Image 1 (cartoon, helix red, strand yellow):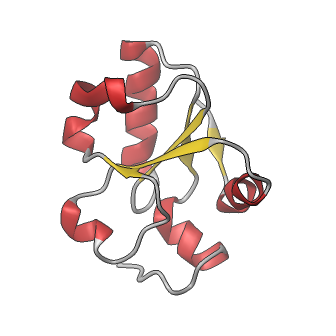
Image 2 (cartoon, one colour):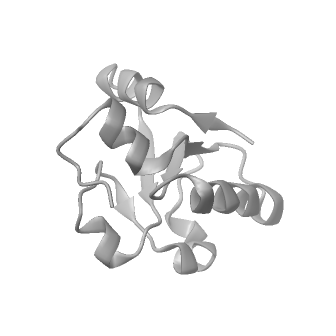
Length: 105
């Protein structure tokens, strides 16, 4: 399973690489802060695979990384995606390493 650290993701974004970010948290969680990208709740991802790009890196994140890890595994094994990564440590790690303005809950 592929993963990317917050620092690695930030470097790629700063370099202008095309990356789709998908936040799979619940609506109320997104209100605490986000890193941009698309919001598709975890319960809806498998029904909306048409919204996941296949032509670039796709980074999936949640709060701590556990849900995103499970989702990346499901997308790889059930849907054949080869370009999906989970954000190591989730948005909590992003807040710690990159953007302390994000509220960690």
